[in-house]
Image (cartoon, rainbow, N blue to C red; front, side, top):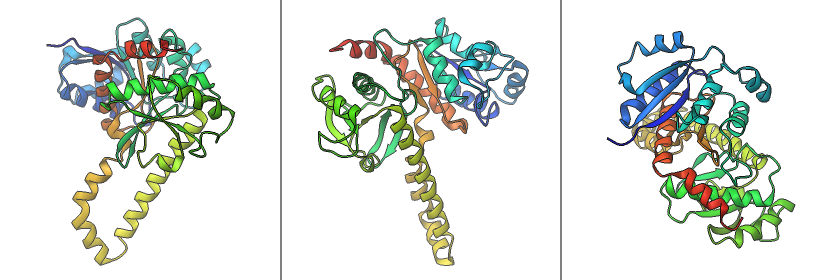
Length: 336
């Protein structure tokens, strides 16, 4: 039997915690025998939920945490004051080496700050970017950074490109991933001061497969495997992506239910449509990893259900098995 990958899961983080989190943990344990989960949260509540499931007790440990960091709390203040919160308890398990990774659907700000301050960055990494996998017409791509580092510098965008390439090749299985710089035009001279300075750095880097500038409209088409940008731009893209997807799906549903004929057609195409739409669901790819840290930190959507929690846990296994931290450390040192 392979060495167990140990993952801390914040049971109390997210809109649907702890019920959906616990359910996702149980599903992950059932799907992969090489993981052990440390579930942090109010033990009386968590143990009460666990009673309804059958699972391997040797691979699940509940760590009591009396406090919860709420979404609206100032992140830095919450981390300083709530030392016994489920999130901080989980972060410390990674810091001390008990766990390889942490998964949480809790406060984004607290997760980002906690990852940098508690888990800490790999030596040589200037900023740790948040990098979700997004669905595209060709499958999926990585958007890096989408919320962790507003006002990044050109050299940091180069690091993001290297880190993103390592992740896509070794975790997602994309050989020699294409890297694009998000910009307002494809011409080399286009953009603001940041993109103009970052472009030649990316272009001259032999460790990445840089293909040039990419406009936002081309992102859903999957023209690249890694889209590099600073956090302000990345977060706008991500939120717009999610909003347009929801709006289009609602319009399709309304159209299919508008007449008797369309309802019959909807019934006939439902199996194929359901399969197609599943590929465009972000929950199928797990959470967004905060890359470049001494351990893996995965932020799932605040509204995550069991399936996304499960997939977020399972992506940690590949991260560990492929020695991603070591690969990232090697990548950022080259030519830096």
